[in-house]
Image (cartoon, rainbow, N blue to C red; front, side, top):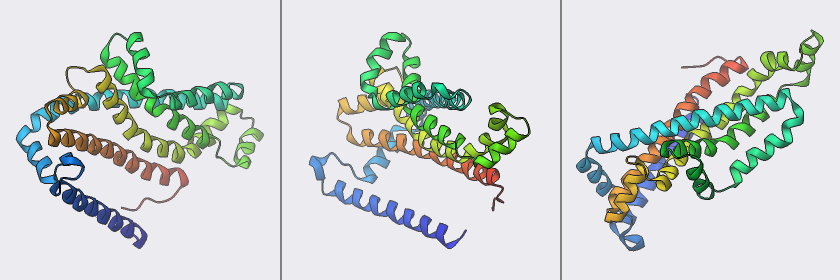
Length: 257
């Protein structure tokens, strides 16, 4: 690891330690009327509640978030490819992506709840719409990133838009697409949790958090929120690791261990 990479890791670790210390102080001094528990109280709640409770609830949330992540990203990538192959639809595709990004999920949820009678379908839809804009715009910018000379070379040899897409644009789009997917992974988790808040299924991180709020169990609320953030972070880290190798491959750079 180079000195720049080591410096970033050290800065990140120092930032996390600083946040934990500040959190501990805020909990011990009961800032904000005692609504901030100490890290020790949150850990104690997790241990006392048991792993089974969190596995049962978060397994449902992760499954729905993953389904939304897959559907939203597949549709976004397909639409971006369609724009490159059929340029006249760009205006419509871009407007659709902007609408999906600008309309608040809370405003969309009641309409989706009426359209889809199955609760899980609604949650998957909200997770999918949370990732659609980022991936569609990122993929489209990546597909348009190749040097014109490379595209002209394919054209000279008789290749059309499909050949340019297959031989040049797809490889060139990998860095931007994977960068968008890194952002989409936490967004899918957030969309799924918000969907659970609104739909109230039998199990999930959202219903578990609502029940904890109704009981006034502040450490449990924090535990569920932090575990949700940890899952989102794991999703980001997984895609980032994949992006590291795929980006090096697409640029012809050797990946160091």
